[in-house]
Length: 287
Image 1 (cartoon, rainbow, N blue to C red):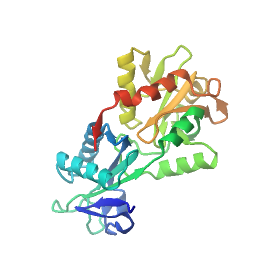
Image 2: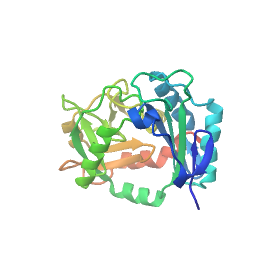
Image 3: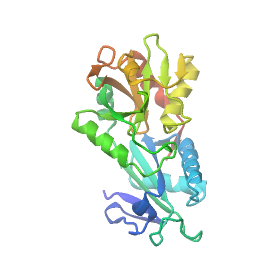
Image 4: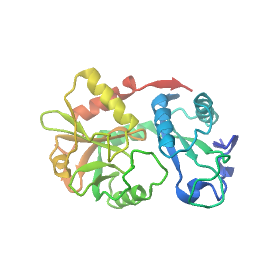
């Protein structure tokens, strides 16, 4: 079956999808994106993802490419046309196509929108979660506005590549004070020896993850002990459990950081339970 993409008002074959060479996303990384999980034929946390998309666009003074209801319809239609039951839907909005110039183009230039969807393998993800994954630490070298989900991801790309070359799944950025900020495409969590869940505040230095927020909802709903604070790389290595969250991984156990096994080197009980409960808590909308 041929994949279908949505590009600036048209549904086209994925292999033939194209944007103009002077799209500002291509020229300047002048755009933002969102990724929603597709789970059993449902979009997960669509409302929160669209909320964050609007915030990112507002921070960069980019208009929404269409009304929110229309954008939701496009997302669902792309998922339907690609017959994705489990996977991801990706949306990207840029400032549009204009002659290459650092300053913003005229207000008459329309934002550009691309939406794609692809299937994933839930069984493979579950098998990975049963074993847990490794992460490496890398120096924080990104711009300060990581709270905006922009397509300017070169530091993340380099960190993820370094992790791959080290045989790890993810890289955790560590700031100059030795504190973990977040992963290349995930939020970072630990569980202390007295079963307290800890993650960095989303006020600065990290993206306010949607999956992160669902975990916070689970914590509140189940009365779990929680601290929203920064934690050091050393504290993470000595933690009882560690895990990462993202739409692409849900709740994924971390069993090794650099050369240090976490806990007993196996996924922890609390992490496994949070992963099990995730889709019972997240908002889902049928495609």
